Amino acid sequence: MGDHRKAAIRAPCAGPPPPRAPALLPGRPKTYPAETLRPILKPIGFTAFPPCGARLHALLPEWLPAYEADQRRLAADVREALLAASARTLARLVAPAARELTPPRRHPAGEPPAPEHPDPRRLDRGGPGWLELDTV
Image (tube, rainbow, N blue to C red):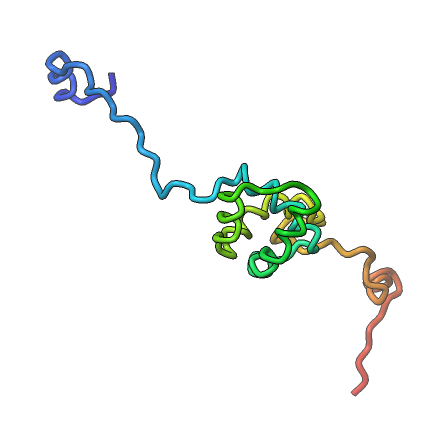
C-alpha cells in the first residue's frame, strides 16, 4: 500500500536483493599510532606547560633524552615516529589531554554573559516622580 502500480507489477518478478559489498574504510591508514605515542607525549607536553604543536615539535628532540632518563627507554621505532611526526600531528595527538586541562566555558558559545549587576545609572529611571528635562 502506498506503492505505485508498476512497483506492484515488478515485485513478484524481483529476486532477493544482491549482497552488499563490505564497507571500505576511506582515507589513508594511520601512520602514527595514537595509543602508543599519546602516553609519551602527555608528560612531555605538560612538563613544558602545554605548548602548541609547533613548539612541541621543536622541543621534542631536547625533551626525549630527559624523558628516557626519567621514565623509561623508548623503542627505536617509537622514538623515530615521535621525531618524524609533524607539528600538526603532535598537536592532534595532544589535543584530548589539553582539553582536560582547559577550564570549562562560563557561558555557551554565541550567548553574551549575563550582567553581574544592573547599571546603577538606570535604577531610578521610569519610576514614579521621575522627570527628564532638556534646557535650550
